[in-house]
Amino acid sequence: MIQIVNSQALPFEQELSDSMERATSIALNMLGAPRAVVSAALVDDERIRELNRQYRGIDKPTDVLSFAAREGEQLHSGRKGEYLGDIAISLETAARQADEFGHSLSRELAFLTVHGVLHLLGYDHMVPEDEKEMRALQNKIMQRAGLSVKGE
Image 1 (tube, rainbow, N blue to C red):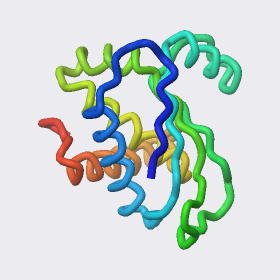
Image 2 (image 1 turned 90 degrees about the vertical axis):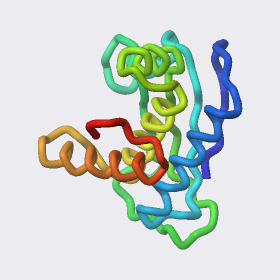
Image 3 (image 1 turned 180 degrees about the horizontal axis):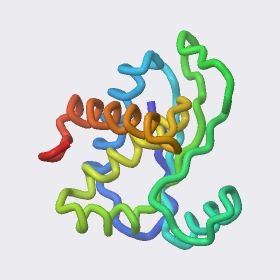
Image 4 (image 1 turned 30 degrees about the horizontal axis):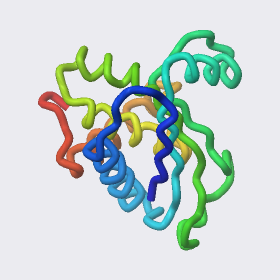
């Protein structure tokens, strides 16, 4: 389950929320955490830049940041409502990226949400082998959600 908080000024329609919820549900089910809870904050570029600077030492906006509640700890997926952590997504950056890649904002938000959920579950892309595994898993989840893009 995902709890979405819209903390920015751009329009945010139900279709976008539905896409994020569907992608999260599929990801959590596929990864053995069907009852887990994720919080997602939709923010603007200014806010995500502040977060990126504060937590990663990078003074520029990014698309998504993840903050795991139990970093390095075992997930107890049998617990109903287990809280995995927070995801912050810049809706401004997501909209730009959707335009750049030629797909919908709905698809881009779903992808960024899946990316964030994977980070909350301990996946990373710092080394090539891990990046390949994470990318394949993202693509499989997006395909199952009916949101894959040609060539993925």
